[in-house]
Length: 134
Image (cartoon, rainbow, N blue to C red):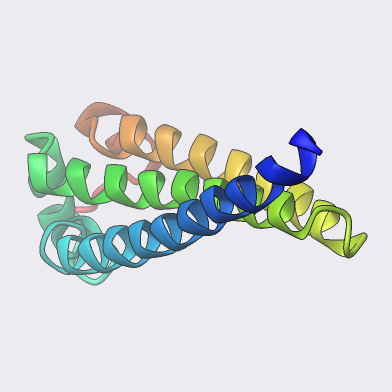
């Protein structure tokens, strides 16, 4: 009897968590998109190599913040999928598989973005990988 009394409350909490995480994902991804247009573009392949190296040599805060926002977006997406999988509560066998695939993808994504943040913002390493012809 007590178990049944808690079931609606647990369902409500999961639903509220799911809605909150969905909005968190929307806000994080939109913020990262705007921040990326401002902070990532000058350090991307859309500009010449010399300009990119000069921009990244100073470890610009805007560039690093934009990448960190994308990384937070990956974590928020995993949290959303975890709550969604929990909410489905075994109704489908594909939800846990989808969560597992997303976790593996996010792990690679976060690892590569962390490496990129470290290597691309260090001018000396960048020059070794991309020699500049004068």
